[in-house]
Image (tube, rainbow, N blue to C red; front, side):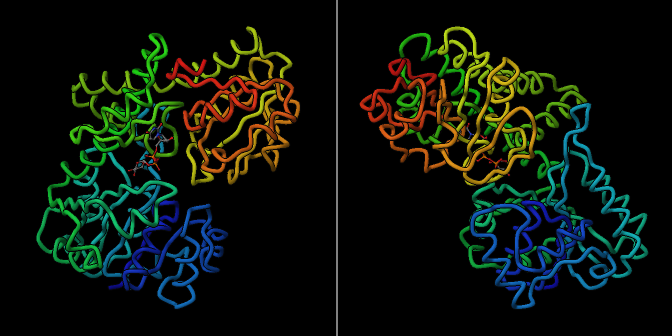
Length: 436
Ligand code: UDX
């Protein structure tokens, strides 16, 4: 099939490459010429595991290319996927300006029967309104249809999640769309992958609910971590033990600094906004508690660092390991690690950061260095804030010779306390009181 993918962020770039991998002819569209140029040379505009090889292969074969011009795709494609950002507006609602701009740019060019599939996360009610607006703008009128096909990919695993999704959710309101989407997804995994075919509202709410439920699991375990801390319990063993119950599952039960990134925080805020609009304040109250616990974890780690240094970090040198919001990505949007770094800087600390992938824009709050060794040299305290796998293999004995004081806060509960203790370190983990 001929497929266009509009928007080339994490979602759009991976989706475009995945569609080409499945044998479709694909054109990706973005408003930024520089980005389009980079993509046409087979390079992703962001660091994402296994994405570059896929882009290289399919841009080289000619099955995948990128453009800035809607005229290149309007009549060419059988299906248009919308994969643009829906950031948070100041009110907390989802800002649909990018979706509206795609609508206004593409719809007036549609002269033949076409299917538009939205993949961007949106509040319930969006698909229904969007279909009407597109039909009003398109010369082909009611021959243009819309479907909502939410995406559940995780950064760092985006390629894997695209090529082998857990499930395919299709919000459709007519049979023709389903027949077309069956062809789009007639792909290797299709027989084993559960499909949920439903109406627009349910599909939109499925995506909102998935993110909110994951966030709730994380905040629940972090609240339990606080009780473990207060009572001498061990939250890691607790998570393992409850996770063996299949009804609970171990996923998203790693206690620590909590969730961040470009999706979950703004998507749950948008859901709370939408719940309030519909008078469902029990849901917005629940989400507010989840957010409160999540923000509290960042403040808790900052306070722990202050306490470990005797009540003040003013003039102290703080080494921060990790800047991205989670390992496997260079994305620092709403990164818990950077919040803690900012909070410590605000209290007078000199903050030195190392991250294996994230490149921070130069700013006065921190100094970014290229090695762990450079970060920890002469440090008064070391903070492990993003759990990149390589940090688990650090040699505590070698680092001990570099620092001023051998104190490390493991805010992600991933370091082995025994190895660090043997090398003379004080290792502190919130929620594992025994390590204090
Ligand atoms: C998330 C959803 O998982 C994905 O389905 C959706 O499409 C987009 O948002 P992503 O933002 O890539 O994906 O990250 P995810 O791996 O889900 O982690 C989210 C945040 O929660 C990260 O900051 C991570 O560090 C944190 N987290 C995750 C925990 O604090 N504990 C956990 O047990 C798991």
